[in-house]
Image (cartoon, rainbow, N blue to C red; front, side, top):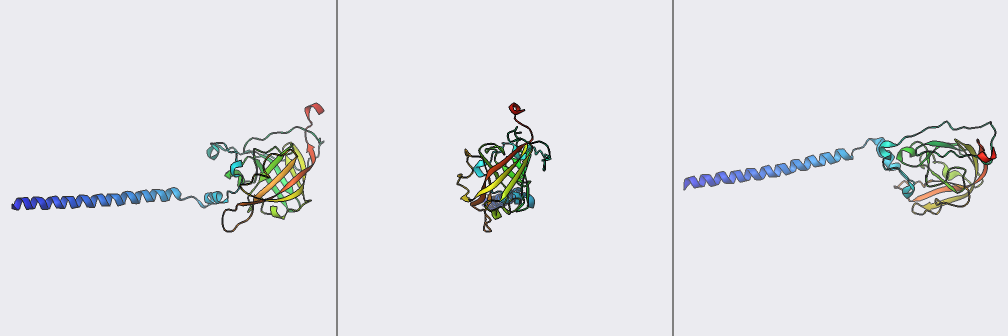
Length: 236
């Protein structure tokens, strides 16, 4: 009888020990999982800032699937103050994704902004971005360019009707005049869709101290002068 009691006590102690081990193991696994999750969520401040500043093209972003790791940024020396012969009709040089192919200038605001073809978080940190779904600068249709409101387009809201904008590209210089000031919701594609007339649409987020803004502000500009560096082949 005594032996049976001892055996029962040992069994109880073993069961209690097993229960403690299981509970402790559960806490350890939970702690390790939480630790791994916290590490995964930690990002350098500059990277976090990039993601917080994303504002723009939304569904208009045309980004290759491997853009995060395979983006090739091409910088060009854009001609400013070209002194050679120019032509009203000329040859376009279509840029590749990630290429700096233009500089946007506005003397009224002191603008001198590099323009990149395509849009993604890396390019928005370098300058303004043109939606690759819009037409190349100087051609017929709607050229759509945007930039961050706290960096390259921080003075865009100061533009007025009649102000002049010059865009120098790798193939020519194009002059625009502000026709209309615009404001629209980010879900409204009215101003960024293709058009039949030759226009330039510039826009940015409306500043909002309370979080991600839903409002976009910008300008629509008319093309007033074209200066191509190379004439059309049939015009040579």
